[in-house]
Image (cartoon, rainbow, N blue to C red):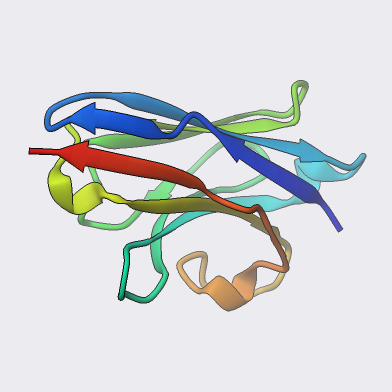
Amino acid sequence: QVQLVESGGGLVQAGGTLRLSCAASGRTFSSYRIGWFRQAPGKEREFVAAIIWSGALPFYDDSVKGRFTISRDNVKNTVYLQVDSLKPEDTAVYYCAAGRVRLPASSPRAYDSWGQGTQVTVSS
């Protein structure tokens, strides 16, 4: 399995920007699909974005398309989530996950390693 550690969260005003990082350990990191999910208080965990091993074909939930950008650096074993034009409804704990299960990228069951999460709070 891959061990994941998220960072980069914080408190920002609406319209602001953050860059979340997901640092992975494990020699086979480059073979994993990486996804970002988020969970707001009292809500279920929801899919945000995913990227395959090559970095091609990033995939986004419609709610963040055009505002969030996912990328990966397989040399640094790190995946990034650039979050722009933040809205109060983006407030949540953001998790990265790694997996090689043949399920849709938006399904939490497609991932078998999860980080501890990083808090993003957007004030209005």
